[in-house]
Image (cartoon, rainbow, N blue to C red; front, side, top):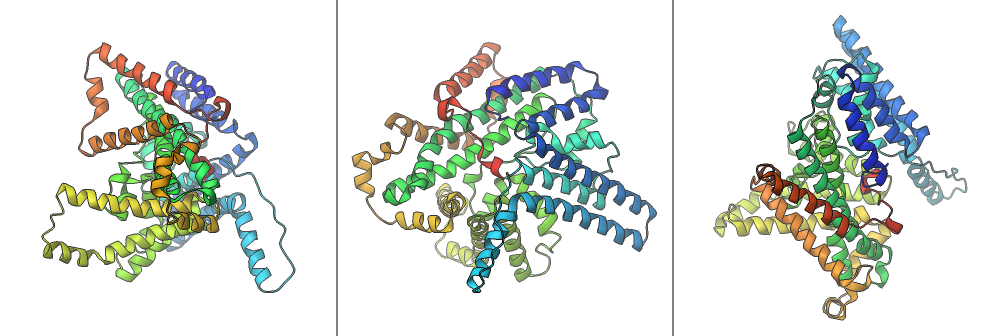
Length: 496
C-alpha cells in the first residue's frame, strides 16, 4: 500500500479514528494489526520475515538483560555473544534476500576469469519491501539494550509495534527504541492543532513526491535509459533533475510518515534538513537521511574507533562507513562506488581544510559572507550530483557512458532547438518542474533561517488556514503526476 494511493487515503483515516476511539490499553494491539495489514498488502508471506527479525531481536534483548543482571565477566561475554548472534541472524536474512544474486554473479565472474567452466546457479528472490529499514531498526534495539540505553521490553506484541509501526516501516525514518518504543506507553489524546500540523507536513510530503519528484522522473528515466542518443545538455538536465527527484521522493515519504505519526500523537525524528544547502560533503551528510547517517555513526563508526585513534584510522573508518552505506542501498557496484566517492570526497575535503584556511586568509575571503557560502554550496551540490550518477545508473558502464555524454557538446543547439521538450514532458510541464524546484529551495532557505512556515500558518485566522489547506490540495490534484494510467508511482527507497 503506497502513501500516494487511494487505498492509503481510506486506510489512514480509519486507523486513526479507531485508534482514538478504543481504550488506551489496547491501542498498541490495533496499531500492530494495522501495521501488519499495511505491510501484507505488498506480500503477505514476507510478513514472516518481519516477524522473524522482530522475534530474534526481542528474544536477544531478554537474554542480554538476564545476563547483565547476573553481572561478572562471563555474563558480559555471553551478552556480547547474544549481540553477535542477533546481528548474524538478521544480516543473514538481509543477505539471502538482498545480496544472494549479487554474490553469485561476482563469484561466477571470478571463477570465469580463473579459467574454470563451473558456475553457480543464478536465482533471484523478490526483495521484501523495507527489509533494510526494519532490520536496522530492530538491530539498534539489541545494541541499545546491551549498552543500557533502553530498558528491555518484555511484551513481544508491544515491541513488535515498534519494529512494524506502519508510517515509517518501509522507508524510515529508522527510529531508535529510546525514542519511539516508550511512546507506545503514552496516553495519546486527540489534539486538533497537532492534527493540523501533522496534515500540513503530509501535504508538503505529497507535494514533494507527486508534484515535483514524479514530474522530474519522466525526463530522468528517459535520459538515463537512452543516454547514448541524448545531447550533453539533456544529460546535464537529467542529472540535476535526478538530484531533486530523489530528494523530493525520499524527503516526501519521510514527511508523510512524520505527519501521519504526528496526527496520532507520535513524534518521529527529522530525516532531512535542507541537504542541498550544505557547504561541504560532511555537512551534506549531516542533513541527508539523518536517521541512517546517525545509525552508521552510532553503531559502526564510533565502535570502530571514530576519530579517537588518529587521522589515518579516522579516514579508514569514514571509508568503511560510506562503503557499507553504499552496499546497504543496493546489491550493485554502482552503489558501492557512490558510497566510496562520498567517503573519498569527505576525506579529501577534511585533509585539504588547512590549505583552504590559509588561502582564505591570504586572499581575505570571509567565510561568513553570502557569496562564500553560495560558492561552497554550489561546489558541494556539483560533487553530490556527480555521485548521484552512479546511484541512478543501472550498471557501471552506464554510469561511465553518462559521464562521457556530459562532454559531447550540443548545449546551445539542444536549448534552442527545443530538444529538452522531447524527453517526455511538454514545454509547460518542463518549466513547471523548474519552478517547483525553486519553490522547494525557497522553502529550504526559509527553514534554514528559522522561518517556520507551518507555525505562521497556524497563527492565522481560521478562514486563511482553510484557504491554505484547500490550495495545497488543489495544487497536488492539479499539478501532481500519478504514473501510468493514474496509478500511484512507487517511492524510490522502497527498493532498499
